[in-house]
Length: 279
Ligand code: SF4
Image (tube, rainbow, N blue to C red):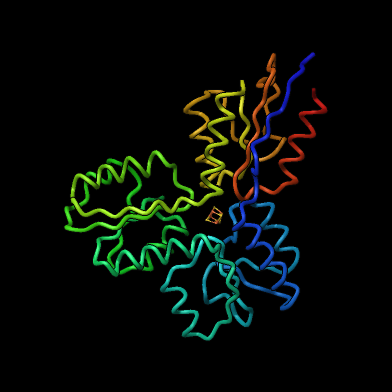
């Protein structure tokens, strides 16, 4: 008979930005009936489905918005899209996380100091596209290898995607610092991400296995998996209880559980309850 204890990461699941965006989505659906959303507001299929049930319609292009107001996603919107929305007089409801807006402001301030802007982040990610679009001369760098390739500039200004791993940020800043003696790097990894990453490290050290709950489309969930796996090989990403392989639990005495910033509480509770029942 298995007997294990569960160690749940502090504050795992929805971050403040996702809570804010979902609240905005619900309020606007109440007010306007149907509300358009360009791509998904958060990277979790269950949340997106719940929102679609109350009138939030995912559209692929501005051309498909029609008469609906548009909810701007938590991770920010590219400047050229915002300009186009304005040109077409499309009403917008801003659900951008205040911490993402802070990164936009920092990038613009660094550019005003005539620095070459480097955004440390995932190529093609919505948040990163939004940040880099705020400035005229921004580039995205994802790894030390990429940082080594960039040309020398007299002045660099560096910001980070909110969910980046601290070690990746620091390594890239160190690499770029060898290219110029005037580098201003502002660590814009948000507090919820830092806390989640620290908790993932702790869980990986203190538990025999770690379950990381979140969608396979969620970059921050993937990051938690990487962090945990680097310390504890028995770290597994699951989307829900269905993905748990009971063999993982054989003879285990301590299980760590964490979740990505867009994982709903009900999924975390489900995994927790089923594990307790299995126990
Ligand atoms: S991860 Fe951080 S920056 Fe991104 S939405 Fe959540 S709180 Fe905001």
